[in-house]
Image (cartoon, rainbow, N blue to C red):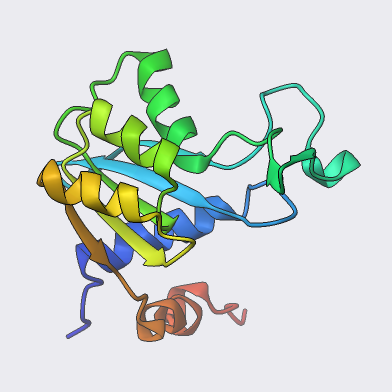
Length: 161
């Protein structure tokens, strides 16, 4: 019997896939908002829609930070706002630990748990805020056996006629 991919692996893989849409040259980040085991929104880091992207003209750096880019977590929450989907009590799967500003935004949006793949300049104040607000944080490592299963399944192999 085939083993099903666990939910945390499934959603984190979705976040990684979404990160491939990133237009930032410095770091590709993807984020998926989930409620009741259903994806309610997704985002990746990139410029404002219709504006110049980092991949077109390079990053616009101020104090060694790209100010052209909207972070993946913010884009996911903004997608909820744009389409009238409540973010309260949702969970987020994000490829990189959220920055301080995204952490504060996620708290205000009512996110109750943060799953992340990689540590990335984890801000001590962000970590303490999450602890004080009792928001669970969990690192998820993607098990490559689930990724390999995608490419070895018979229904993805070319059929001989």
